Amino acid sequence: MGSDSMLRFLEKLFPTNYTPLSYQLQWLILPVKQDTTKNGDVGFWDSCLQSMLWYFVKFSWGWTVGLLLPFIFTSNYFLRRDVLFAVRRVTSCVVGTGIWFLSTRTFHIIENFTGECYESQNMTVLHQFDNLYTCKKNGHLWLGFDISGHSFLLSYCVLIMTEEIAVMNELQKVEQKPGKSIATIIKSLFIALNALLFLWVWMFFCTALYFHDMPHKIIGTTFGISAWYGTYRFWYKKPFSPGLPPEIGNKKE
Image 1: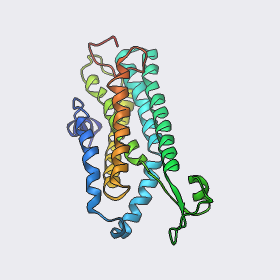
Image 2 (image 1 turned 180 degrees about the horizontal axis):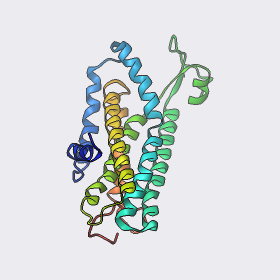
Image 3 (image 1 turned 180 degrees about the vertical axis):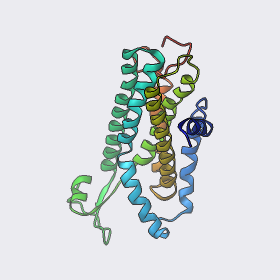
Image 4 (image 1 turned 30 degrees about the vertical axis):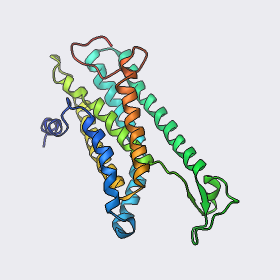
């Protein structure tokens, strides 16, 4: 399948003019299914999923930014022919990194504040370990309100990725098409971002079915949706912000 055919296929699968509202509904509905599956009953499948989730999701923000940053710069620069505008748009990745860091730190603080340390075998409370880090360092179990960082991060990544790749719809409208080398870069990044999008949606589905308690997942997902909404639907519409992806015929933001 050629790159143009692949692009047409992906555009049909993920229409660029859709609203992320459909994703919001998925994020809130999927966690309910977890109650139908017992972690102890999935055996080898559960073990494989835990390994894959740890490997992929642990570095999911780095992978997302690693693809988004060059895609945002090249696509936005081509549409506006303005380096400063492209650099300004790239700062959305910096904002996202700040949101990721502050949110995950908040989750850790909440878990530490609400939990207690238990001996792993007989679940006896160990009062001598009064925080999460020393408890786990000594090989014990800390039980607190563990907001799902996976649900937060995966939902947030998917929503901002779909916002940014929507610019491909605008690239189809320009009369002056990009050169072969630039077009290859943009198309390759677009295909890679869609592949990553598939992976994050699947990982979120696995998290919703097999891991964390439902309240933890709902709150984590709510954080992800709120972070997306507060930036792309509110702050990025303001003058002093990274701004939204450009649209043909809308030269001012």
